[in-house]
Length: 338
Image 1: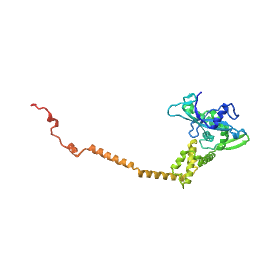
Image 2 (image 1 turned 90 degrees about the horizontal axis):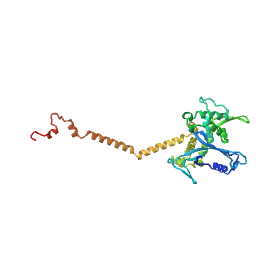
Image 3 (image 1 turned 30 degrees about the vertical axis):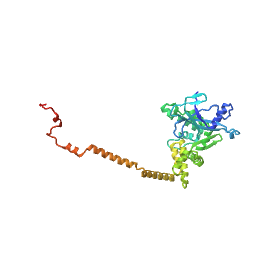
Image 4 (image 1 turned 60 degrees about the vertical axis):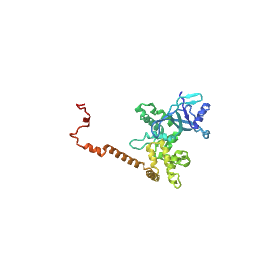
């Protein structure tokens, strides 16, 4: 069996420890398996790991807490190995598993059923939605054209994903829901509800407490001068824009543009454009390198022309009439007397 080194959330580690200790909870699956699903931003088949477990505050109710992890592999540029106790793992990759919002993973699945002619979407049971989406994604994936198994999106993986409790809850966040009977519910994907949900996520991510966890984003805001006194309104817009860029890592480009269009960034864009113009003017005033290079090039070109043309004496000799004159070599010929 292949061995890999992975970074896991504490919940997964606790679950694995429980399984190893043979103290399984009814909510913990006997075997967790990876799912191959379309990535919400690129649509490329990617690996995800679902899991369910009871948290301490949910043990009494018996309600399982389900989640899903994105699996990413970090491969070193040079070959390397891992040492685990007395064993050597030849594969030097590091697997990083991080929680991902199931709403993001629902987007490409639900979008695959959107009518191409722009007609209205009908309410349908969730099972029918996922069955048809699985069929379309399996036949329309890159594996059909390239015959690459790694790009295949299996139908069973879509079905397993649809059965997760976290996915069932996520359906209500991005779909209109109608209850036909207590046992039958029908759903219809709603871009408006999705946009509303994404804006709520942006609002949470743009709070100073959350955004300050990313030093890179804070440095970007400071570099643009938005952290200075008197720019509180621009700073608020900058935080929202940064939060939108974070969310953009897990949504398609068209939805990302719709998300940006739902905010008014005119004041921020005008400020950043003025800041850029000011920086260009400052660089041009303090670093006239381009002008020096132009002058140097002109001087070199003139020198080359002068060298090619030669002096005035040489040019006159070139124009002199040499008809009837003896050649210089004739003065060095042997005579009869010699």
